[in-house]
Amino acid sequence: MTLVLTVIFIALVFEYINGFHDTANSIATVVSTKVLTARQAILLAAATNLFGALVGHAVAKTVSSGLVDAQFVSNQTIVCALLGGIVWNLITWWFGLPSSSTHALVGGLCGAAVASAHGNWKAILWSVEKVDKVTGAVKHEGVLHKVIIPMVSSPLIGFAGGFLVMALLYLVLKNRRPHWVTKVFGKLQLVSAAYMGFAHGLADAQKTMGIITLSLLTGTTAGAFDGFPAWLDFLKLSPAAGGGAPDVPTWIKIVCALTMAAGTAAGGWRIIRTMGHKMVKLQPVHGFAAEFTAATLLAVTGSLGMTVSTTHSITTAIMGVGAAKRWSALKFGVIERIIWAWIFTLPAAGGVAYLLMRLAQGMDWAK
Image (cartoon, rainbow, N blue to C red):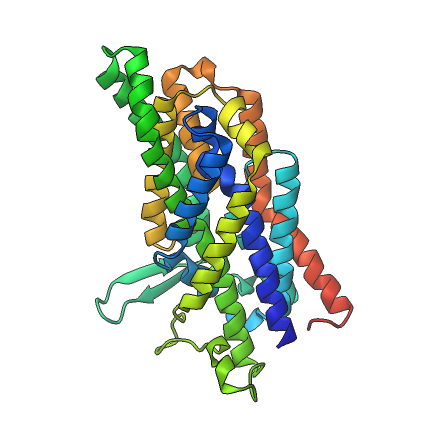
């Protein structure tokens, strides 16, 4: 029981860090364009993150049952997975790099699971086909379909989408005065920033929901809650009929949503400076185009249960917007640093989690 509560605590720490680490993703543009002050933007992001986190749980189901083989997952595995993600998040936050909390968590989970399986890579569910019992449709799940393919495609879509939306706006607004454009899109950016905050909550809060659900399922299967009073029955989870993933309990959604909102309120100014100022100089119309593109991408993929990175989506959308402005507006030195951080996130977080799990096994804390 103590171990399960420890997992929940560490998962919420990750969610809190995710809140301030990824705050920049949803508010960097609206702050850099000076449509809102930093304090106003944080309040907007916190509120919309909370709302988005309470809507749906397709991504949570992917994390809780669609990435690693449950037989190789213990609560010790989950602790090491979370710590691996937290360490990498803090490193990249310190250097002001907008790396992906999503991929840090996924990498940590995969690395810890492989260590738990004593080097057996089959602990990772690479590609799985499932047939919907109602419709008969074949669904593709696993790391390949839910993580790797979206990891490659979402930045490309984000860049292309940002470029096309901005190019269309240039075409539509070419005869408008700059003062009018700034005034109108200053107001419209409030909507796009709220949309971005909602999509961030929808996409990112669910990862921790999935981790906590997985932990409670593991604890229930191991008998950790046997003999506890009836009022603690809310901690017990079991797979849904037919061996599918359990639904995410409402209390988990609420706790994770509130924790992310609290983390969001703490802010993430180092990353805001990188995204909002160092990559490309933004005006309200550019901020609107980037936020609208990224938020739409996150909303669509989140509803499909794909673990798409908020960071990748908004950063590449900003790059696309900058490219539509002019290629020379992009600062490729900063972009190169960001891309390297993306490339290293999965293996780095996975490596840290793997080493932590092996250390735990060496100390007889884990099998």
